[in-house]
Image 1 (cartoon, chains in turn cyan, red):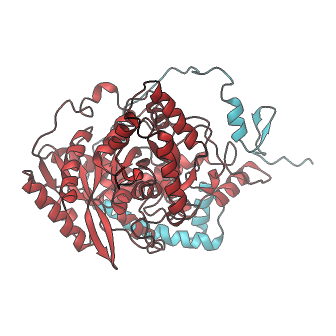
Image 2: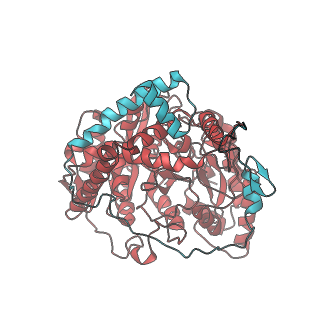
Image 3: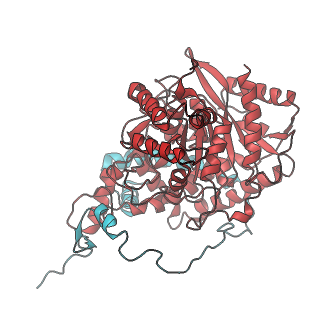
Length: 98
Length: 484
């Protein structure tokens, strides 16, 4: 993988990494991939469902606890809160006024 | 009193003493806390010993005085640091959760509390359970009680070491690719990975959701069985929990064969990379089991050799998804930045350790467009083949056995430079999680390394929900080495 591809992957992972670390991790990933690639030699039944065998578990979409039971504790865990909400920073840049 | 220390007695003996009024839980927990104080500085099995352990113990003494009985009443149990206990820190040995306080009890914790167990503290682990040596903890490594220059295995190395060092008679761990069985083997204790779905996972931090199971550590098979029975059961709040009506086997209703047909996957076990004396011990154990009247036959698991490769695709893929929740917004570490995306990247950049970054990167890569078919899709199909191999083999045999780990405990620092070499430590345990079947590691004697006698483990695998068979054969293996 090129440095640019690694940086792109780190962006997708949402992890800040410097160039030196990216290079090291790129080497690790290359060696792990060269090992896991030998599964291509395995004969598999290609007609089987791709997602494997699973069962769905559904439940009624109703609240099991009274509104507010956990609110205080969960807000306490959040790094930034405002008026009973979890506060976040801007998602988008403000359009500069012309 | 006899010469055996109170901290070395079995759970059954302790129960008898408490029932007879010769021992209180408070005195018992105090004795364990003293051992921890004296010796855990060298071993570092615990990240925290709860300050209310003695108060919990007193409370169970009151419960007993009121007539309550129970297999774990007053017995201390340690929790791996990825299990939630309300009001206590649960950090998964990660900087990103260093100060995180759980808001509810994991189902297993609730079951332990109901049973009267004293939750004594949280044990060290590889960060988010990523590792086979407990060296990936953000809070420093745990050492093997048999030789403190060596690792205890991992990722549940703190729990394994705590039981091996007599800091606690029982502990819980989690096992995604061997994280209970491998440290149990390296520390000379018993460790069980239950059937996928046997134990509720509500309140354990998810790693590889199609692989994770919570299970017990103990000094004997019998004690592991006692703890397993307390934590196993249907939980409607875990969508992967097995419904009660499917559990007749777990409850032992099918009966265990008196003499077993034991399958050995020979080309898998007798290969390069598995230490010679480990192979020898394994063969000796088979001979002894044969002498007990069991039958030993070769068995074929042709796809098992692809298990580790499939695992290092499926697991990181699930890890990269599961760890997306650590974003610096709702809980845990948060690094300030001007916009939300920078809060994510800075927080994760600072809070995640090296192996965590590696696995999230790898998982994101194998799931990305263009690579999905070659990696994830193929691995899913290989997984089906491995599961089919096991099912087919179990038509012929009652159990399949291997060594738990290809080597005894290695030196601290020996494998940290080469992640792939570290991954090889789980070659025998990983296919079991891939297939979802239960397996146990039971001590099979010791081998010598540089003058140190190091324990190794015998690994028994059974069909879905046949934990009863594992306990039965596990006890037979114990007999061989008790008599030694």
